[in-house]
Length: 283
Image 1 (cartoon, rainbow, N blue to C red):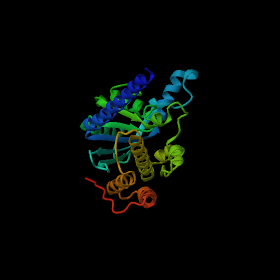
Image 2: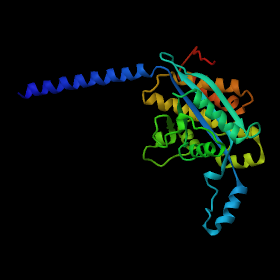
Image 3: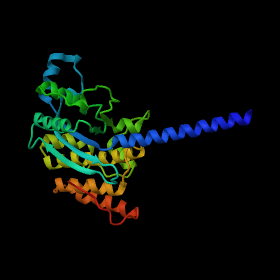
Image 4: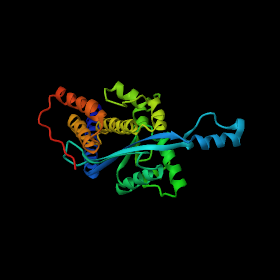
């Protein structure tokens, strides 16, 4: 009787494993074409409106300039496509905008349109649920814009988005992007985080451009690792890091971060992995 029960349990386990394998394979097949849009934003403080608020509220006013007074001063995003059977994603676009060439409304409008053109893509940010998405929603209301589908669900766990800071943290204390990047040997911000506000206020747009682009590149590398470790994509990690760097450099050839920091790092990783003759694709 004991033997029969044991055999029956083993048979159930085998069937369960087969079902899970088939289900996983089915999910891979159903996913097929996948896209992600990795985005980052830099801000300036709207001091004049904050001061008006402080005058009106007096001692009740918040002592810190919080997100409603944070104005988008730079935006960058990268769109990646993962094709079934391909080990390297296709970089479909790399966009960098600053206050030098576009207003906040223009940057947000262009970003919303990019999301609208890729309704099935997942929006990927680092800590975006904490501030970026709130600011984008504020912009939509203020400028009379319609939110793209990725921003409609207010839940931080919405399927349309991945906040990598939340995803990698689970219940641990949330790390800063350069902190996590340093711990995992990924190049990050060319300027310290606390200096970006000063760079914006000085109008040092080349450095602001480098900063926001670097954040997108760093977040993209983390996204590739995260999606691969969760079985969502199957890629050649080293070739993919080179591909996104070369595509970004093609879009922003003046970037010293990409040329002097990211490209050597990506190539060193490829050499360390013993890879040769890898072909990457750009549009």
